Image (tube, rainbow, N blue to C red; front, side, top):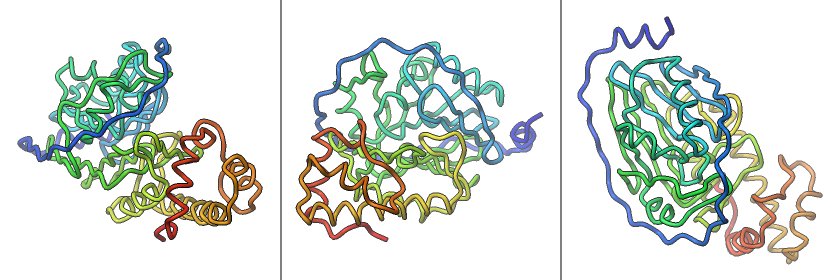
Length: 311
């Protein structure tokens, strides 16, 4: 019997409480052409706190909390019925209970791909309000059609209670995207950070409302929460609070150097090579997260008039 199973047998019954607020939708830019769904990838489950788990593989990381009354899930991985079943089977290795609530950390298809299947199975899918407009047209190489939109939306905060446990979604500002949500499990002291936490190069999706300064500020707000474990959107292992702090420090250093280069007049076409020649920075920039001109245009517009990161 797992730690979670033993705790659930002792948990007291609690009524469900839902607290939410609606949000205004925002227009979405044009999206890439759709592609065929991917074959299901294996999903590995790791317990990060009593009754709270991260599910790695098959898209962005998922986080779920098992209670005696059901499961609260964060993010639904790459689109496809086979991948949905792989995630569901992974959850069933911990608990036979159904998924009752689903939170989306943002609209990208490697995190929202199987919303529709969980909705059909009776779960309530919850996301930040601007996702609704974005998901009217959004597609990507990971999605042959737009992922299903959340049925419940919020502007800044949304709380659910299930089986005596709480999950709170926060949206502070645009960082990774304009509809970022961080999900906090206060009793377990766990945060699901979505792609605001990423073992790869930090990714700010400027065409969809992302902001490098907002990224840093959102990490600062995460650090104000009382948590001991954070689940990143990408990466095989959970993070400590100290690791989240170190990650913010690295992004702040990147903002500081990028701001200096931009204010010194570095041409956009030379920016990536110039900043990659800098010593002491945590990442080498490039690829789809940094090289496209719309992202460089947004970076220059933001940092040319900004004082820098909030340390």
